[in-house]
Length: 101
Image (cartoon, rainbow, N blue to C red; front, side):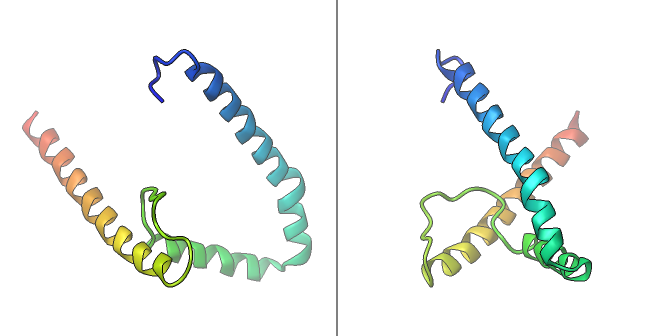
């Protein structure tokens, strides 16, 4: 939606409230429940696994990608490679622009 659209501010306000509610729910209900069930070591291992996964997953949304196996795995690998190449290209271009100016 274009920021100039008449309903943009209302939509953003609703989005902000939904996010705030989500964060509050996580902090007050979900995270304490998880801490009761899982030991600190396992939570650390899960965190480490998530960090490792970040290195190989797509960096941009791909809403039209398949969401069931095996298509999701294949599309995810391809999207990740393309996203990372695009991100690297943009970073190189931004660095080159800074050098010139």
